[in-house]
Length: 451
Ligand code: SF4
Ligand code: F3S
Image (cartoon, rainbow, N blue to C red; front, side, top):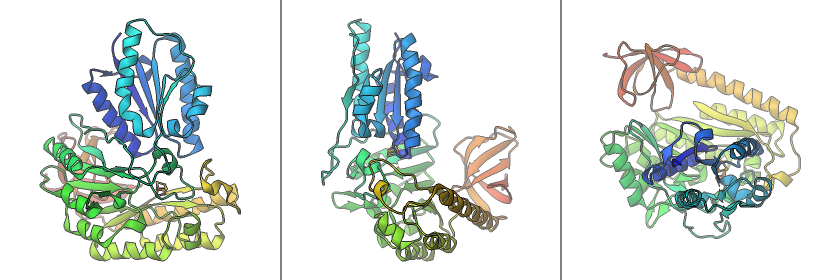
């Protein structure tokens, strides 16, 4: 029986990064990647609980794997946020899962699979009636836990990599499940981060994204996030774009702005979640900043780094949101001039405080507001992009066009996609200069500059 595995990843970049790390650990341990989940000896579902729809998807997948397990020997691991949120329910309703592994225990999956593999091989495996649960991080402890940052992930030919720098969240926004499934903030040793970045740089990686639920509250010994940015940017040879996600507006210090301004490798595009333009709603969300403080922050960054663009997350229809509150969100978005926005409407999430808030907004109004928000943002995006036409920009080559092999795709430091013609196939991950000629939908069409 060959040791093969397949990882299915759901949810945020943190989950992607952790799946990548786990992939490295399994390969190192002698496991091989299977092309499809149904063919793998071990399947790991790395799950997300952010919305009920995300969990519903996993329940559907669990049904699928029940059938696979009826037909062949397979080890099924359910890992991640759902394992942390509802382990007992999973135990009762999905007995075919072998291991339920929480967010802080993903690195243990390698040993669990090895042990299980041995028992399968020795044919000692007894029919078990219940999954084994490996979860728990003491969510209400006000101290750093023992979250294990999994070692560097790097696959030959990858030009971009996530680098987790912290995990967990102390903020408890009233709509968010994350603090309950990831526990309190834990910052990673800066030396480990620097080592990982240097390794990635030496392997030719061109872009790194520092990850955490709240990166600018990074604190390791006497180092803060601004210090870390300087450390990360030191002596980079290949890495061209250093990004980070997500910063919390309340923790975005002048020192961090100064670090971005002085370190040219940090991409001039910042994703700063706003959520609402109404201070009343921000209070109710427990965001701990006012709309004035938010826009002041954006203005301050624009003043210090004029070429910087911004994206954000915005939610409409939070309980108690009046038409006036919504109008404030529209106004601040216009004022901030976001290049992109991830826009969504509030959905009740079991286990969060906002579920019990009064004055719910009807579904009809939520949808209408979202539609208006999206329409206005699209107009804004097009306007900002049109302003960039004619310029030459440094572009990271990301792929060959699927529709036309004579065309290639790339992205600039603002994360904007550009399609351009190229007679020869350029190396994926190479940096080139592209002149931005026109816009097609949301994508630039360009041509190689000084080909
Ligand atoms: Fe969730 Fe708020 Fe923490 Fe972000 S800052 S992960 S929205 S609780
Ligand atoms: Fe989902 Fe957990 Fe990320 S709930 S969004 S996978 S932190």
